Length: 237
Ligand code: SF4
Image 1 (cartoon, rainbow, N blue to C red):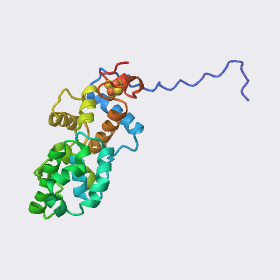
Image 2: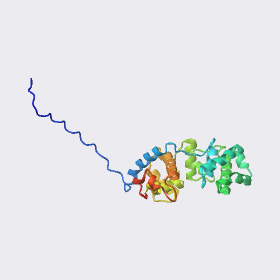
Image 3: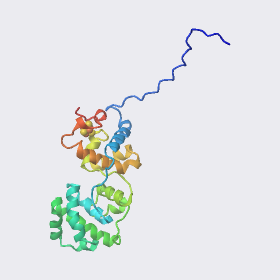
């Protein structure tokens, strides 16, 4: 039997301290900050998606055309009537322009939007057998359709993601967060597409839109209640 000694047993050596990642700051490059920006907004807005109502591909196109310079709530109010009044693409193509303008007047820019919607309806009938095309190149040939509208429609109707829809909220957020310096939406989209993995292109649009509507508002952002304030170069707090 080993005699007991009064000396306490030696404690085992302490495990190595876990390596800590350097704290992220607003001066870090976009490549380091973006994954955190995305994670936080994704958690903040789990329900972020289009709020526009539609039941056919071309209805989504027309609702998106009407949503320019308007709110989704206003467009939904208008389309609730419009989509039951005009039931086919032919109905849109043949509608009396003045009557159609009156139908969509509350969405603003109603003359321009009437021309675009009726022109798109005619082209869909003439060139695409009445079927909304599912590629960027083809959908861009429709009147009133630029990349923002094309991205929204292709993503929501067909799950085809060829870019990032840059509306006023997405552009403002991208600039304030220091992800681009550009103001032209096509150049903003190009910068975001370089930075953001393709799998996140669709969702990031709706996350930025939600954050832009609720917190990072124009002209005055609510930085004090923003989950990104310590990693945002434009933060006012
Ligand atoms: S900190 Fe301010 S400027 Fe930056 S994203 Fe948040 S609300 Fe916008």
